[in-house]
Amino acid sequence: MAILVRTIRSTVADVAVSDKSEPVTRSGELVAACREDIPVLTERLITAIFTENPEWTDYSAVSRADLQEGCHRFLTRVLDLIDEKGLDAEHDDVAAAIGAHRAVQGVPLEAMLRTFRLGGRIIWEALVDRAGTISAADFREMGTAMWAVIDGMSSALVTSYRGAELDRVRLDERRRHALIEDLLAGRGRDARFAHRASRELNIPVTSAYLVITARGDTYPLRLGTETALAAQGFRSVWHNRGDSTVGLIALENNPSAQVTAVLGPLVSGRAGLSPAVIGLAEVDVAHMLAALALDTMPEDSHGVLTSLHDRYPEALLLRSPDLAQLLVGRLLGPILELPAKERDLLLTTLRVWLAEDCSAAHAAPLLYCHRNTVLNRLQRAAILLGRPLDGQRFHLELSLALLAHTLVETATD
Image 1 (cartoon, one colour):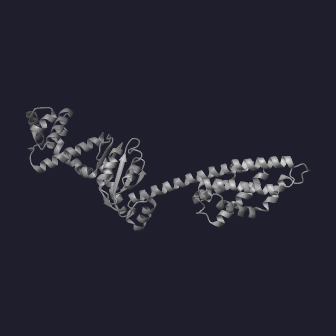
Image 2 (cartoon, one colour):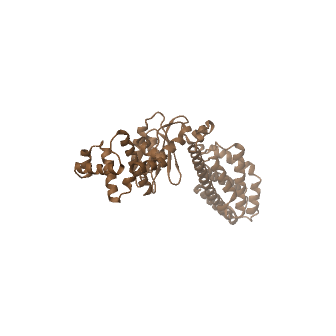
Image 3 (cartoon, one colour):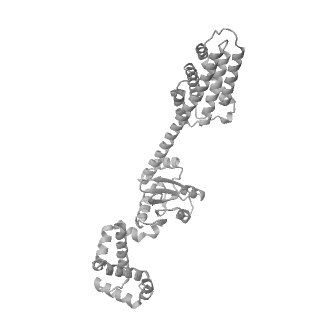
């Protein structure tokens, strides 16, 4: 642009000095005369585009006919706006249309701005060649208009181009999200759809996959999670679903433990991780299992990544809430009817005792009491439940009942 302005000013100055005769050509007539040369000027512009610094040019997605038509429209519009003294060139519809069209085609903005500069130079050279004895005042006015036109049309081009580019990015993002939603809904079982999703999301069709579901008050996963996985050789796609963030991670013969090692420090909220499934056809199942693992965690958990492999008892109870409630009522009913202080004391004692392999001696230090106190509490619980606290099956049922009660309390809180 600076070179164009200097050329215009220099030419205007030269004409002002040399022109001493009565003017015989007006600027409007000069512009009209140049319009007759538009086909020739168009070819000149196309030649300049590909010969002057061709490494800056990327019109590979534009056909010759399309480029020719665009250059023709641009040069014609430049002359029209010069005739109109460059008024409102920054809102020019032609420049805006060209910018939007080229953005969709993927032509770099720098290439478009360079084309506008070259076109402006070619128009100016054509005007100078036909100038004849135009008055210095008219020539100066035309030069000023020329500068305003190219500057304004370039501004219109940039605004339109960036708007179209943003729309394209948003459209691509919506398409990506729609593909991921369809995979989570089970469409990956359709081989044709799976291959399309693989191509557009750049993930494999048949690889083993892990799915992670995360929730939190703000960002349940730290920024840079996808980059951190990529650095370890894992391809992944991520999707925000309003209340959660979902990630599909392709293992591609890598160990799942490596994913856990990478993701663990990046969880700022709470996250559930599925077992590995085979291919895009099963990511809907993996998503369901990851969500189930997440639901077994307390709502106030922070910075915790839980694999379903570590939460199968809780997951089984959550999947059968009615049975879990019946189990709690049958095994713990009389204890739950006690006053809160005694109830909580007995429930805590039973949990610690079971966790310590039913050893009162080992449970006592953890409960901050004597072994005999533990035995007395266990005897009290046995009397309330109407049966002795022994037997492998009873211990299993009691453990599940205590776990189910904890899950219900967590969900209620």
